[in-house]
Image 1 (cartoon, protein in one colour):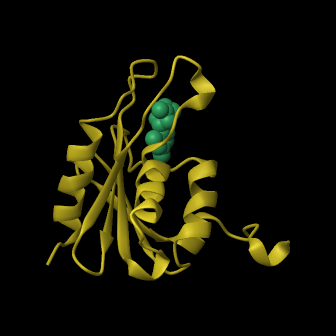
Image 2 (image 1 turned 90 degrees about the horizontal axis):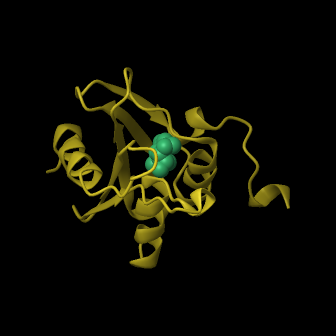
Length: 133
Ligand code: THU
């Protein structure tokens, strides 16, 4: 069984692979699936800065592209070198809201292994969803 601590190890390993030559701010993410598989992601930047991708969305898009959906997910860890556990950007919160269940646990962490736990709905209250279309 992969616990939060172990999942954080995966996120830290993913973080070490980040391509962040511009910001130098490396982020890692790891999604734990019910079949015990872990999908990781890191931020990937570009000289055309706006083309950069965050670690969270990298992992979530990998999850979808590998054939998994929100009901396959147990939890997600995100880690960065922040004073307090990292705070995901608004774009990533919106994508989490779409691709994960509202009660899925999101564990935010820093490299000192301090953590804060939220649910998807905690991170984006009153979100815009497909129901609004
Ligand atoms: N970044 C992430 O990957 N996730 C976050 O939660 C915060 C920000 C990335 C985007 C960019 O490559 C770098 O960190 C600095 O913003």
